Image (cartoon, rainbow, N blue to C red; front, side):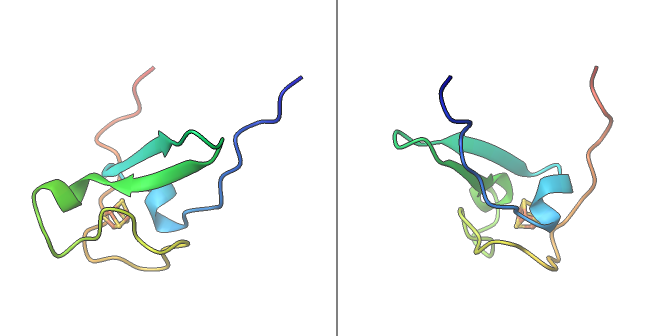
Length: 64
Ligand code: SF4
C-alpha cells in the first residue's frame, strides 16, 4: 500500500471555490489559488493554513 499523498490543511482554502489541489512529483499536494489567475493580488500558492482571505467564496454548489 502506498502512502496517501501528504497535504497540510489549507484552512479557509479547503472550503473555497477557488482552491485547486495540485499534486507534485514528490507525493505532496499543494493548494493552488485560482483567483491568482485573474487577480494578481492573490498568490498562486498562499501560505497555509489560510486563516482569513478577502477572496474567499464558498463553493457554487456541491456537485455529486
Ligand atoms: S481565494 Fe483565498 S481562500 Fe480562496 S483559495 Fe484563494 S487564497 Fe484560498
